Image 1 (cartoon, rainbow, N blue to C red):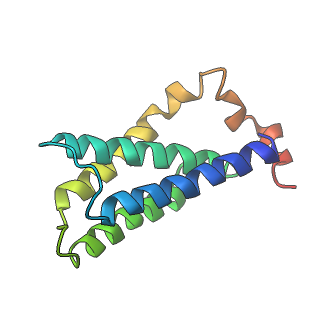
Image 2 (image 1 turned 30 degrees about the horizontal axis):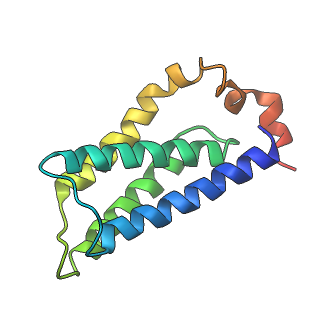
Length: 130
């Protein structure tokens, strides 16, 4: 992966974290009816896992990426528990974890995609350390 690609993924990760934080904490954020809220959590953390993995290609998607993202989800739930217009939910945190786990399960399929294959090529990762 080129240094420019990594920078773009990192920018995407920062923007996604900012958007997720705003959606989690603002009283006027759009809400999803019923259990589709859990699907929203799953998809959001699936996307965050993808962005984090591609933002730091020097290492695989391991505990060093999984745990900080799960910790981020926990912090959001703790913050929501302090807000009058929000509430914390263990089910939301479980949906966050499911999104991260789904990304890990999808990795073998993602590695075969021609558009994404460069993420795992050793010589392009070595070039990204400049």
